[in-house]
Image (cartoon, rainbow, N blue to C red; front, side, top):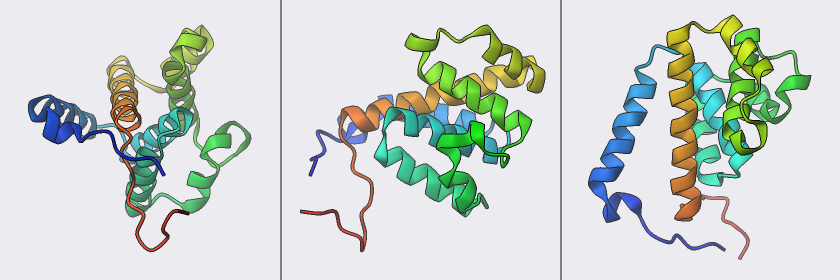
Length: 154
């Protein structure tokens, strides 16, 4: 089993307060929380961040997201369960999370522009940037999600 490397909140509290302030800005952005949840989970899936997938799927369910939409999120392009606005946000999430490979293609931006105002595009891009930063903290420092009654195999 992987062991945590360090707790960034104890090691650099002021820096992590800045991250929490950024997170608060994302939450106060006015974008739909359901959309923010989908973006957080999808970016975390791409990055392979178990800690963040665990956290954000739980938060999404607590806010009313369905199990089915969470299960199918990795295959959102093939499922009719997502709105056109959500599809635009998920395409932009994938483009920016994988920016070294995608270079944020024009077709993804055109889809984004069709469903989000200029201000919302900036707010969504901040949300995507923030979750990617959180993923890097959690993965880099090997944060372990809560395990509870279902203990990991020894």
